[in-house]
Length: 128
Image (cartoon, rainbow, N blue to C red; front, side, top):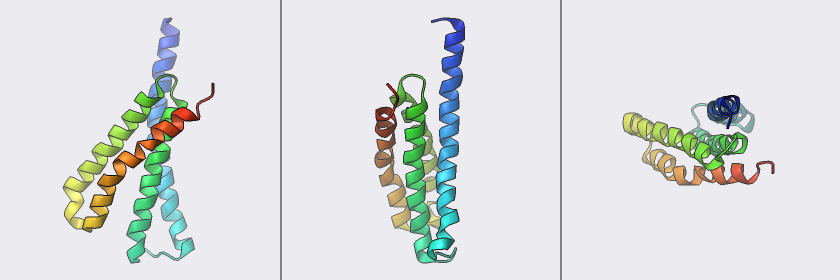
């Protein structure tokens, strides 16, 4: 592998992971943006569940994006994004766990294996 090809692969690898984290924020943000349209105010009890669902969906989308657009080894790229999401989730539970209901914290942690499905989806949809 030439030095230029290696540099291109490294840059594309880093870019796929960084942009995947932006995808997570965009999908989760879209859920917050759509919530008032479906009648959920900021003080609504269902709003927390709504935001959690969109965050989980954003995790799946981010992992799928990293796997789909990785220049090589899509499962590794999806795994890196999953590890970042898992670390952030564990940190959030550790530092903010008592501020949220138990069901929220439990669902956030239980959803982590489900979010890993994004690696399979992204790798499956890669161009041949």
